[in-house]
Structure formats: structure tokens, C-alpha cells
Image (cartoon, rainbow, N blue to C red; front, side, top):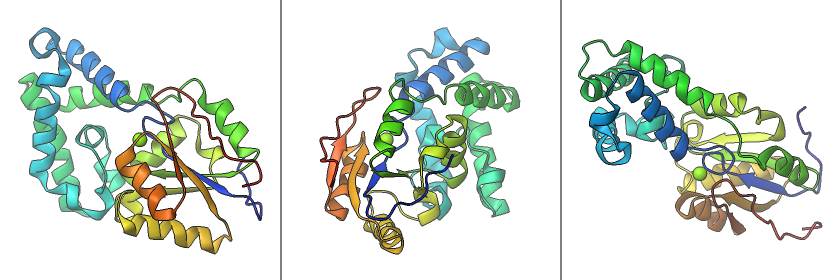
Length: 243
Ligand SMILES: [Mg+2]
């Protein structure tokens, strides 16, 4: 099922991570189970304090954050990104693989990082499930508006998550920061969304998302409401049906 464009119907722009699927909680849970698998949990727990700063430091050191295709990718998402699938440049691919390997070698004190990489990736993929309200909520919204997904991250990973969560069919368009070459908070991203809306003869209705910094910024660029999402809870749109 792909929703066709309906003329005169407004577009609801919807964030993905921590709006429709868990991000922070899934990240922590996958990390805990990976550390437990390799016997490092007692030494490294709690993960928030001891592990994520290491991951962030290594990601920053790669310089990959400025690669256009990786704009908006967080350090923890880079940990399960398939860089060979996500990037064309062989040097950048190698730098991404080296980053993942360095993180696990540092955390687990193992010379071979491949087993931990595989365990983390699998644990993380298994957690790409929509929050309880999402399927029914999106179906309700889609009966009134067209839905577009607007999301920060690499094209490969964000589209893979939409696939794994079974959410792709709800969205007429998907706009990813790594494809635009600008993060959601950037005017360039907003301009790209505005251009696509104009091309399809559509008007934006609101931006639905958990982040003031990114979803809020996109909403104000487009001059529409930001419907703030509290993780795991369906937001009330409070938008008139004929808007
Ligand atoms: Mg979000």
C-alpha cells in the first residue's frame, strides 16, 4: 500500500526516531545486551556514563560527521550503519568500518571486533519496532492528510529502519538529511521540503516530532505548527480536518 497524492490534502511531516520508533532506549538496550554477551557488563555499566562518551569521541575523531551523506548521523547510529551500503567513497567506507572496529576494541579489550559488531547490529535491528500507538495513529492521520517522513540520518539507515518497522507504506515521501546534504534544523533542508511540496501542489500542515531543535526548527521554517511528541505517546494533532 502506498498512499497516492490527493490534491488539496495537506501534508503532515512526521519525524522517525523517538517519534515513531525508539532511538535512545533501543540504543541502550542493544549496547547492554552486547556488553553482556561479551562479559563486560559489570565493568562498564551503567552504559550512559561509561560507554557513550567513548562512542562519541571515536565518531568525532573520524571526521565523517561532515560527509554530506552522513549529516545528522549520531555516533550510536553510526555504530550499526553498513558503511559499504551507505557510502560510495572507498576511503570514507574504510573510515566508517575502522570507527566501528575501534569502538568495540576499546570497550571490550578484544583484538577482533567483528563478533561484537555483528551482535550489536542484530540486537539493534531487532529493536526497530514502532511504538504501540503508531500503526493505528498513522492510519488515522493518513485518512485526512498525506504523510511525509522527515528524518535526520543516512539514507541507507533511515530507509532501512522504515523497512524494518514496516512503516514505509504510510509515507508518500521520505526526506532524509543524508540525501539532502543538510540536517533538519538547516534552512537548506526546509527549502528542499518546501520545493517538493510546491512540486506536488501540497501545503504543509504541521511537523510532528520529539525534538524542538530539529522538528521545531523545520516547523518554524515552513511557518506551521510543531506538534511535540513525548516518546511512546500519540500526540494530539488538534488540527481542523479541513485545514
Ligand atoms: Mg526524533
